Length: 141
Image 1 (cartoon, rainbow, N blue to C red):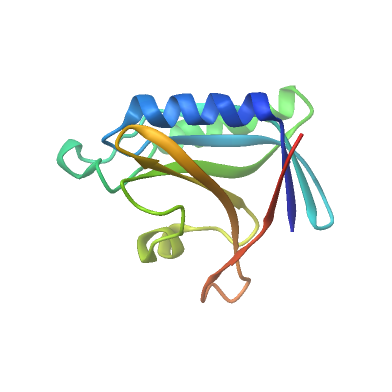
Image 2: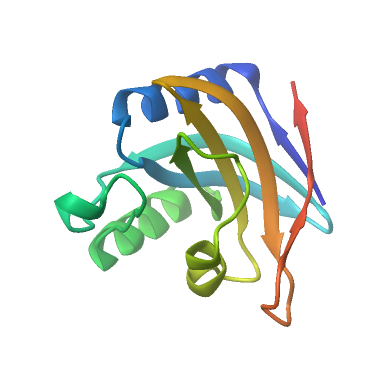
């Protein structure tokens, strides 16, 4: 799986994730999916609604956010192709919590934020058997 992301959108994600530090931040990836290639055309940040005392290592959103962004993507002729979030002071590798809550058809972009600075971004997709994530290739354009 190859995920194409513009440097401008990467910068936008990095800025959002640094602003969320020391908590996790996140949002949706809007774009187009073709076979084993995903093109991200926009990112939309969504407020972390997990319990405040757990936001340093957990991220959640309201179901209404998901529905609203599905509608917005449809109106723009795009699809929700994935989800992005940060791992404060941790590597950009999915956690067990991430695996338990992931969807196999989504791409997951994880940004490692160390001491308030985004330092790494990696892409993942959950295997259909939900047993593990497989790392994809991130192509910056």
